[in-house]
Image (cartoon, rainbow, N blue to C red; front, side, top):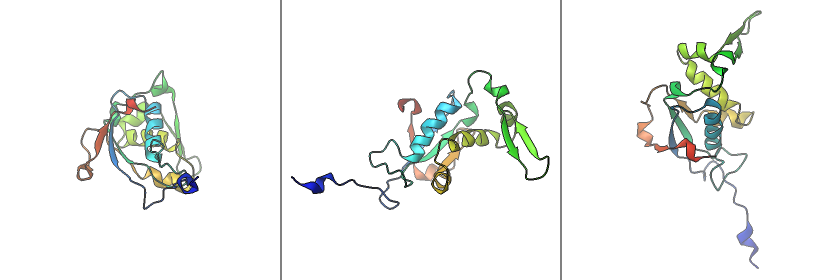
Length: 153
């Protein structure tokens, strides 16, 4: 019996094969989109997934402003932030954030961030996410492949 064939192969930064993928967020539910994007960023769909290494793909989300919330979350959900000053707690709903510059980016990034591991690894993985409100993006040189997010579980 050859025991060398049973060795577990663990990916590292050099051996991880990172790709560029484009996800269209048109008519996608924000939470479900975020969970699938978080899995792609993490590398969970790859056979050489390693929990402590950034071995996931770089994800470009286009048409982010067309992502939707279910139920009454568009008006009832509240995002809280703190300015750092006394009495500096600020509240926004998704409807208010959509009107602001970069608000849609903050909504989707907040949802994806909550589904990534907390700590240094999660913060570094979040840097592989690029969100654009329209169809145009700046990563054409990387030749990203378009994927259908509905094909993933």
